Length: 167
Image 1 (cartoon, rainbow, N blue to C red):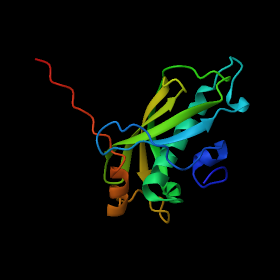
Image 2: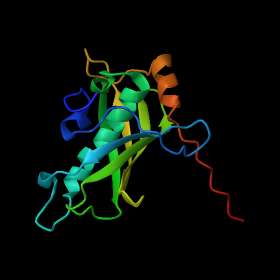
Image 3: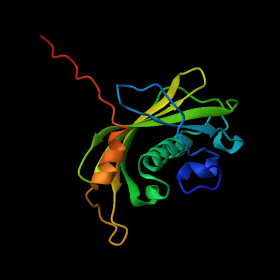
């Protein structure tokens, strides 16, 4: 699905099919999307406005949920928390970046993700950790993840090595 699809990135011209990416750990997958950098994303300093990074990364999370669970599932989720590190500016002259998203943790009704905005040369311009929560559409309250949802999201779970304890 491209342009006009249900997930947030569709309005930005983001493709909804996952692009193959190197797995961060065996049996892990990362959802990736190309993002067209638009002239209107820029600010007077000639780079992408900081607030737009959040929209780019939302496209990554929406794409992950739709890849893992199917089209239309993104509307059941809300953003509960995000922590964003701006690592490098994205010049407005850049035509396209890649956003990617992986699952760090699956909770009872929430999922912690790692989201990145990546330049064509592989430089990570922004990295975020976000918590998204699935909700009951009738009540608007969080609800437990179903087994189907857990299984779909687990395909994107990154197994990170624990830091070795200091001696």
